Structures are given as structure tokens and as C-alpha cells.
View (cartoon, rainbow, N blue to C red):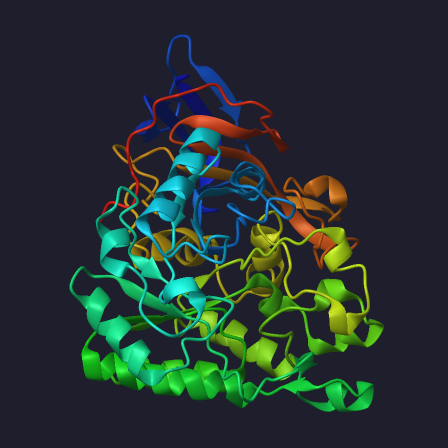
Length: 444
């Protein structure tokens, strides 16, 4: 491991300082710092953030390697400034057992670009019929603490209650994909004016909101933790706000695309804009921005969902749902939230690093930029302007909704456990083997 001296970085966009990294740890922060023989990184004008943490990533491995692998997905993560990602369980086989989550863990360790923390399925095969091996996954080497059937709603209220009860014993959390399947059969986009004009089956807001309302009451009844995935409607924000005022232990996430894009984009039938939950109305976009700014929504999570080109380059009805988002997330948050004056860089660190790590009980990440803390650091050029292109994508798939769109900023450096994974805006092609401190799923 190199000793690094990062000079002139703007800590959370504020005061300029030097950062010394030794043996994977921040050794000192101050001005005029140096170390003999150290590698010097000129960070003059760059915003220094704690390494980003994504609580909602689809890495596709095992089983769907044509879309993404853990190696390519974590390379994409590093390019976006992420030093840790939580891997969703919709793989093949489904991550519903200790064996699968430990396999994902090992593949992430071998790749080295970012910490991979597996998320376990709530039900066997994500079929919603009976609970998966929650205890076995929790006590495995992966130490799973987040469980989700993402892609499918845990629709049976009794199974949802039992899951909340089970994870309570070890401080786990159920992350719900809030979608009533009966209200969304055949849905192709958000239900509203645009769907009516296009003649496409609509995905109504109430299908999300009704499940969230049910589940926050179940979480209150059980006294357990609930996390709401990819919240997307104004009504959902209102429900979460009500639940928090009531003292219910609920957290929620919003995706970058729901902070910026609207259902008006569907008019062109470009399947890059097909996603679940769907792009919503402008009113919903403004509501989720406000919810993130005032703390009702806790975090930004990418819902990075790669697909091979043949699954997107087809007619709208046949196209797969999902967008890649790791490389663009910070830039979209910069545009939709920072440039609009809704939040500052300290808030970005909270919603994209500290709080996701806290929700997922992932130690060694989301820590402040202070001496003695693990060296998880993202250096971001907030003054840069440019167009998002295919050259910005470092995963296996290209289904980004931002291709050709002007987005501010660029991640210049990503440092994971003191190891540089992105250098001057370019992903390091081959990482030297290193022994990073163990941070796998340990609890804070």
C-alpha cells in the first residue's frame, strides 16, 4: 500500500486541507502536510467526500453474467466514486442461502474495486411463499443484515410480519419493493396523462403507496426496522413523513433517476427510460427532491440494473425494466440537488455515504474524513462540465438514460482502503493485490 498525501482538497466542499493516508487509514488532516516517499495527489479544487455507499445495486452474478459481473459492476462503482455496494439477491440461483451470499462476498474480495456486501432474499427463490434462510445468511461469513425480494413485493402481510419479527433478533432490516402486483398487472409506465395519451397500461402511484402504508404499520406493530426501496411518488413521501413523526423505525431511498427524469420521456418509446418503479410526473420529482432535502427520504441509492443490449433494443412492451446508474449517480445528485440549492456537499456525504452504511450496518464505510478513520475517499471535480457518454460507462451494459445528456462534474479519484481505484478520472485497469482490513458486514 502506498502512502498517499492528498493536497488542497476541499473537505465536503468547504475548507481546503491536506490528507495523509498510511496503511489504509487516514493518518492526519491539516495544512502543509508531507511524508517522505509518499505518492502525492494534487486535489486542488476537488471536493473530498467519504467513499460513497450504494444500498441498492444489481451485480447479476451468479447467473446473469451477460448483463454484469461482480468485477465489472464494482469497476463501474469505483468510477462513480463508490467504495461499497450492497448486492441485491435476484441472481441465479437466488441469494437465499448462506452458500450464495458467501460466493458473492468472495468474488467481491477478489475484484478489489469496492466492498461487496450481499443482500439476502426474504423468501425462498423470491417467490413470496416461505421465508428464506435468514438466520443462516446472518450468521454466515457474509453477515447479511439487509434482506429484500427486490424486483418482487413481499405481498403476503403474514410473511412480511414474520420477516420483520425474525430480523429483529439480530438488528436486521427488511427492504421492501413496494408494488401491489394486482394493481400493476401488465403495467408499462406511470399511470397518468402520458400513459392515457400513449395507450400504455399504467402503474398507479397507489400501488406503491398502499404497500408502504401497510408495511410501516406492520413495522410499528412488530417494533422492527423497515426500509423502503426506490420511493417514487409524492404520496409515498407523505406516508414516510407521517410514519417518522409517529416514531416508526422506517428509512427510505430515492434513485437518481427519480430525482431528475419524468414520464414525459416515455413519449419517444426509448426503452432506456423503462424502469420499475416507473418514471413519474414532474410533481412527484419535485416532491421526492423536497423529501430528500428535509430528511424524510434518508438516502440516494442507484438501483443499478444492467441489461444486455438485446433486452433494451426492442419494442417498449417487450423491453426489460432497469437502468445502469453507478457511474452517473453523483453527477445526477449534483445537478438535481446541489446545483438547485436544495442540499450541500455535507448533505451529499450523509445521503450517499454515512446513512446508507448505517442502515446496512456496514462498518469501515460511511465514516467521516478524520484521522484514524478508514481511507475511503472520493475526490470530485464539481466545476467540470460535460456530456455523459458511453466512455463514462465501465460496466458490462450500456442501458444508461443519461447518454447524450449534459451532467456536471466528474469523479477524479476513488480511494478504497487506501488503494487508488480511479486515478485522474480513469479506472485503474488492474489492481495490485492488497490486504485490506476486514470490513465484511460487521456491525456498528
